[in-house]
Image (cartoon, rainbow, N blue to C red; front, side):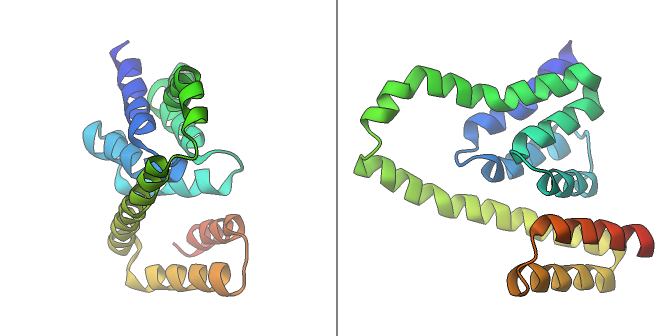
Amino acid sequence: MILYWKIFLAFFIPGILGYGGGPASIPLVENEVVKRYEWMSVQEFSEVLALANSLPGPIATKMAGYIGYEVGGIFGAVVGVFATVAPSLIIMIALLGVLYKYKDSPKVKRLTMYVRPVIAILLGLMAWRFFFESYDGIGIIHTIILVVASYVLIERVKVHPAFVIVGAFVYGGFLL
């Protein structure tokens, strides 16, 4: 029972603090899963993140379902997904009237403006850590090839990121 409580907390807390949706909560989930509970290594978490990114739907719930299943089986997956959506569900039910009343408030708009750079910095730090983990794991040559190819395909050629992720999986499966 304690395990399921830990799974709940590992996804409920990032759900509360991850203002901005799934991408904003990814570094918080990583902190809980990798550092606090040590259920996964950074490399394993980055693989789960890549897999969750390649599938349709909200990234946070996919990660919660997968990690919850790995740690606690089917019930762990259910607990993880529920914990991910529970903060939003509770807040939306409790504060729907207040949110509707103040949706055009300058203070609310300013808060959103201040939060966005923080999210960008957290995502950048996570990408930086993933880069160095991959450098240690697969070497600099493969890391540079994957980074450059991903950048060119996504930013220049405009290939959908899901295809780039699948291509990286194939590259890693055959060459690594």
